[in-house]
Length: 421
Image (tube, rainbow, N blue to C red; front, side):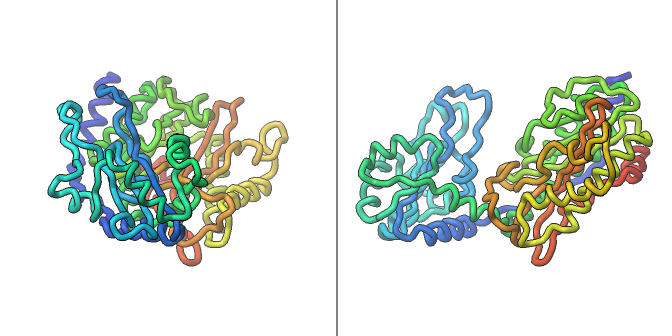
């Protein structure tokens, strides 16, 4: 019977017959504009960044994932590359991409890679100057003869660079890139919306899949199948599908428990599509109907989230969103054991999101138009095996904030109605 129900879930997904438009894309000139902004912020410096360096073993079990700061500035999604930026170093070194020479053995396993000297290297990379990584050390020496500053990302390469240029003060460029990444361009917002739409469809699929007697991993499977069918590359993070006592474990990822009638099911699941992450959480009753106690806690969380979103506007700090939710809870009397309700909200409720599900940010920065963050209050009553978290993504506008994931049902009544369909 259990297998039959799971097959019906997947049949339902297939029966939707929905066709999706191709994902939006970021044009090469936008990456160039980002690099220009970074060079403008460090006009007399040389900046050297490295792409991700996968292990030498051709049987890498994890697959390739680009270093996100490198990707943000280049849009380049192949390994072992390097980026040199230097406004003071002449036109050929102002922006240069370095690529490894062709490795025919690896290409038999991983496919053909763009190599320096290829006729289409400029067109495909978006860089006027594409060199071999074998030229990097000599080219860097030329750049440092002209530049007064030297920057890189402190991610493990800095010691080798200090040995290469021992008389130079090497500084970390991360904070300057973070300042750029915190503001999402219209093209980035479009990619985030694509990931959100895929994730919302996955949550809707989970509501159809959830039944007493099924296992958490069966619901997780239906969700992941939904966004993989849309062409998304991966989970934005390990799916959290926690029922009953597992709903109070913040980063529960085993997803192996059998769900029972009367349980709540907390699903914190997001797709990553075209490198951009979504992060959405809903909490639903396994049998389709909240108990009075479950609805009481659910409504507290929902109202806390609404209170935070209502006060979200440019000029606040990220931590203020948590404070807004706590202040709402403080007005709702005492929780179990006479403790304040805020004591049961055991984590901050917001983080930036973009290329990383927890995108880098400056904690002292004020929120500004174009920033995208989550709002995810939760209450966790371990003694009652009752955890509720509700999470949406918002984008700051000129004078407020817009809920990007508003299309997904959120009130207890709406969820019960959707689960009956």
